[in-house]
Length: 106
Picture (cartoon, rainbow, N blue to C red):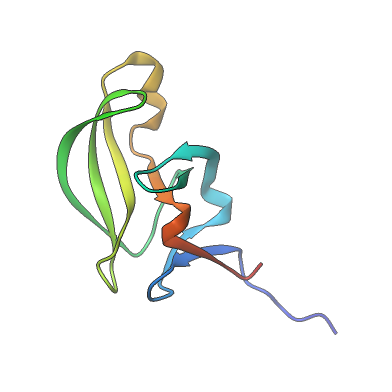
């Protein structure tokens, strides 16, 4: 008999708090501060830090770091605003660094 397996998830690598669903991944070809990163439409069980303007590889953005709601480890950031028209699709989306997350239910 097959075992029931829940949705494929990503969890904080420090405390295993669930932070994202695999189904919310938009792209796997982004770069974070320290590692490759995923662009996601949603994140869960995270806290959003203060907004700041940051010059990224794709131009100036207003972003806010996101932290695991259990252990406060920085996992990536949320795009609050993109100043270049070609980057507007990122607004409201999340970056999770692959070095900060682990796969669950794969």
